[in-house]
Image (cartoon, rainbow, N blue to C red; front, side, top):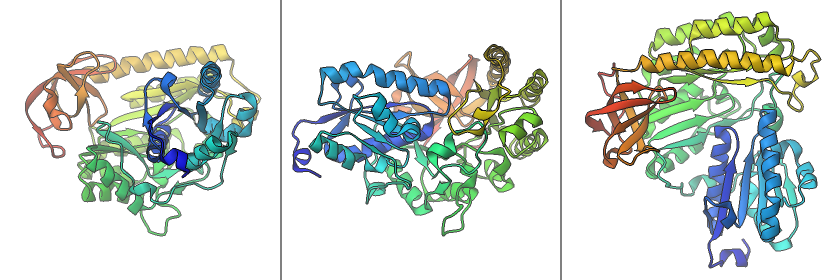
Length: 461
């Protein structure tokens, strides 16, 4: 590190804006950790920043356009404060590289998805030279000793941990393999070390991340599956809860499904993207399963763990999707009755094969289908929430609710938000709460006697 940066007396301010997925949230935390030795402290007001880091997303066209708009809006701030350094990272950075520097002359640094580990070195370089740079390495950059550095104890009880990155599936609508690369798993000792640091910092729930976590372990010297990883984390750490995302249906194994019934610390919630209820559309998407195959997996999951909450992703208006195809998707939603759904209208993405398909669905038709689908799912989600009333659930208490300091908020194992009256002293504990009311996106509850530092207790209805 250069002497001027090492000896800086005045703290440097770091503003981070994260777009898109939880993988980006994790990378943003890495940036905080990597820049802390240079004296950078996070701030919530970008007007105060010395460095602005934008962690971008290009999974959908709308997300990418938001990024371009936001970068453009920073021109005024750069003109006001020329010493400000603006850094773009994430998928848009990987996708466009130096083209971003050409388009936005106030942008200082572009970091590809594998270049996060180089941010401290590159910031130091452009501070010294006054230049601009783009870094898009073919392999992941990880600073020596990075995994042993302290974790920010910012009061969060849930923390993400990336266990693998990349994807080998190349679904025809998806840009991920082109901007995140092929599947790469982290060695188990590195994951365990990071989780133990998080535990020491007060984290009680870990969220294991990967574009396809079911593929974890492939390519590692040690023979280990994702189910093995979950069991080891449950046995070898003090985490109260374990969650994960995202799981590909074609790779969902019986071994992993059994974990929901056998591993008490694993939350009873699975996000299992289906994307369409039409076999014809699924084949054109390159998903590698049929509706029958998907429904068989859902049946096995509910057989092994009847209480499991299921959420999913659906794309409407995929090229060539007919009204009959869409009706089949609606039939699947009626049959499965997901607890929640993330639904989107198809948009072309660079490099993805579907961008070249000529039988595009009219935007008005896609918009109409999306409105119908979302209306149906809103009613089902509300029905699922109403069914919770009267039940006793265990809630990991995260802190005061947004509306009142006298009310606490937390999540059930099924990933439902619950608000209830309680003292702040139970934050970080698992509390038994009786559900007394239901709303579209949350539940209301009554705290029952006894909160526990341990995992799930018997007697949950």
